[in-house]
Image 1 (cartoon, rainbow, N blue to C red):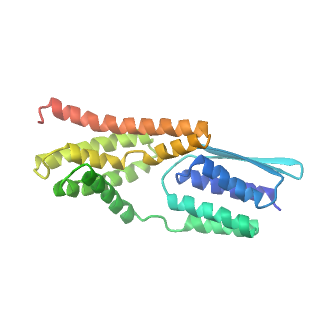
Image 2 (tube, rainbow, N blue to C red):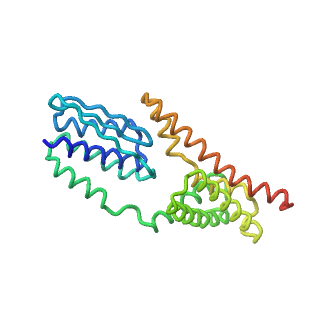
Image 3 (cartoon, rainbow, N blue to C red):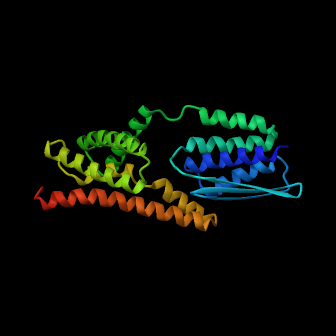
Length: 253
């Protein structure tokens, strides 16, 4: 068995899971399962939101690899597929070449299209607006604000800007668009529209993963994700609040 191929394959699988929003304990479990499928003597995996490290003991020699995580997003379908692949590998024990081919197929599969991303962003914001008590006009405005906000997020990420800056700008955008909707008479109240629209920026996955990692004993990853969720939420509040503050000071109401 080529131990270097195993290290490369397992680390790529772990990296893809972390980049797609997978919990660190799940990544460690998946990578360990993959390595154990090839009957290594011992395997140790350490995953964090910014790196995955694997150490394998095989024939009395220690082999290790470190993969840096430079970007993170949300693709829970990818997390599910890689987790399922690891279980398939553990049960059927295919060759490492077949495993590499299957992982490459998963990576090259078509992800969520731009149109789907935009449409469901609008659905998300309009749905939350309903939950906050918004009327039909509020829901209608929230749908298009969600789409416009998602377009801005996608374009800003092309410049490799950090999440804090992106969320601040998008918070400002949501406030500005909501105020415009109020002034042209589409809505009567700002609160429900803004509350529903900013839910698109709320770091729900980061917060959920933080709690799950802490419950699994992953203290470093749990606290790191909690800090990330806090600062992203704070940036959203800063962006939204700044525009509203200027609006109120200028006598907008």
